[in-house]
Length: 456
Image (cartoon, rainbow, N blue to C red):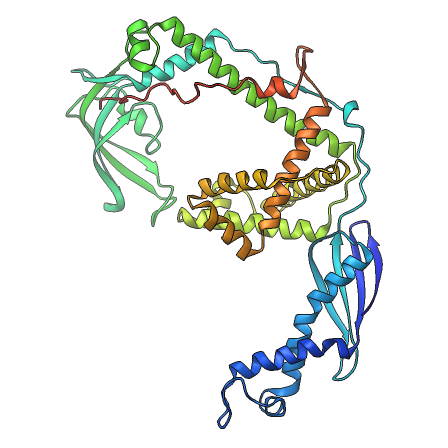
């Protein structure tokens, strides 16, 4: 094999490869064996069909084509290794010259990892919001706990915002009942806006036994966009009664004996959450700053593949919930062109991040241990709801185990970024990566409110 490499741009090369016909012989013999094992020709046992008969029945051209298709990937790999090309994505192959008995000549254009000069990370500074946990924040958490332990008591009065009502609904369009537009004994919080538009406006002020009608525009189904007449009947009105905030409530809603202990724990948890928000903010800002300080061209082919991958993933998620891409665009109020532009922008950013982290990982000679890789496999398998070995086997079968390995390596490179850049909060306090990670809580898992919620 002879090969040359031509640089088309900082992110793309063209390989020109010539393979002598003699080097095709192993692949040609394999093609004859595979085709011979598949075809059925009277007078010959399967797998024992002579090559001349295969040429006559199937065609020499079909055999040559199969041999060429097998040899091209291995020859590209050999050329890539010879010229030390750091490829990205899939090559675009064009056969330029080939005839029976003659050398195979073809080109392969492929994206490559550009040469990137990283900035001095120690000279980059990012600013995150200062960590502040106010009494209002703690009170908001207490309010959420009180809501979870509230009880509902039937009252003999008209409904107010915040009350729960038991209602029946019937929707009609031009006197015809809307499919799926009727429901009985629905529990609904007045003012929550959880059901059809306009409902809360008529419920406030209604009492048990009263009925009324109102008009609303339907947002789905066969009558989407049409005005519907909705009849609503209130069957009961219930007042949400919140427990008093005292030591007894702390014992009910948590493992603590006093309200002060509960508040301290809530404050600690909020601090941990806000620390994590600082960490995520520092991560995003640091990556953005590093990319801005580095000239990183985004390979077009890789970006295109990434856009297609993101679009396919989006379509899969929409299909799982019974929606279409067109429905999603309509809901978001965007055109397909606008969505493509957004996906392209996100893909470009994602590819640049990968390139920078890969370059840093190489510069720092970052390695991934078997334990680290195994931990990531276990973590992803748990999220997917399958066993680790089954998940790993699926990765290998799909040929993407290397991508997971790359993700782990980039994660370690990101840790290097966060260790070296200067991180300060908006009050000027310097923060280390350990500060942002915070202390390990040995008692994690004692969530509040594991008891029954509303007694509807």
